[in-house]
Image (cartoon, rainbow, N blue to C red; front, top):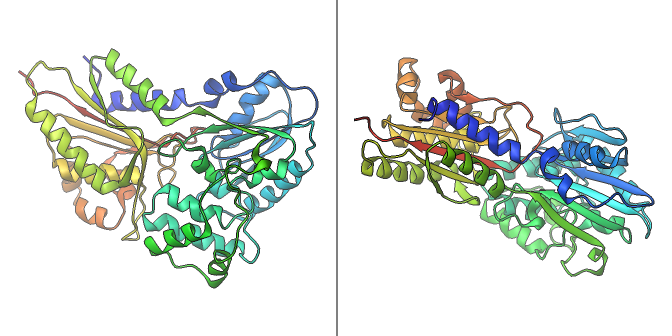
Length: 422
């Protein structure tokens, strides 16, 4: 018999985060410490923790890593700079310029270790000529509100940047670079992790323009001009990328598998729905609610509980002015679709501890969620219409707050379905 469903689901999420901790996952991918000059650079929500893991294995290193505010770690030699995410700021701009200068100083016999995780797209900020930081911020905000999938957002970001799309690696050429990556993107394509600063990309400025048009993102004239000329994004086969090795050290599937193993050992029948789900959070919630209801209807007393697990990166198209992220919105839409159905509990959280722009990982849902809301005079449908899921779950006591997890393998969703009692 498993413990209380809410506690059980939290324990599964904690296990998923634990497996993705760079202090556990990174050391096995590090080579012996090279002789000669070593530079450690990186960006992302997990990058400071990754640098900490490197120095635990190699000792003090020279370098510069940019992470989100609140995600810094004590390092012996690597400088940790904290900057804004998901919308870049001046601190990220200055730090990125310094990082480019640092890697440009590398010679043929030097070794550059790049540590890249989700969040690097906003933290590595160096706009192309003619585009200001303020304009880049405005484009970022509009993309985040558009509902565009992460790969399309990153296509736009690459072609407005002087560091993404392989350009960080080219700045270090001809030094050898090893890039260790923690994936937060569906499919684990290195070109889209942090907008691929160490990976070539086959997209074009026309692809970026098409994405802006498809998701109706208005941009200032300077951005239109930038996307009407060739950008610095490197083609995958460019010779200057021949000195780079890109290696993924943690990915969503590993975390889901660890949670699945724990659930199986606790007596659940686990059904994996995929580690690369995309789409509008509320639409995916409706589909998974239907699956859960169908499973519950087919269960007999005494059957093992069924656990539906999924990962990936869902999106939210901003329709209202509320506070919410894709995981909380998934949970709110799921609660409405389940309508208090007995025996079904769910959790959806971002493994980095930040769902959307709020300092909240996500939320939990149980059969009493809507009843609690009604008792408090809350209209759950109105909260969903206003994209205000975080406010809703704060009011009903359903928020999951972890603080910085120091890693990022994207969304974690679990739906527990228990059979009726005898």
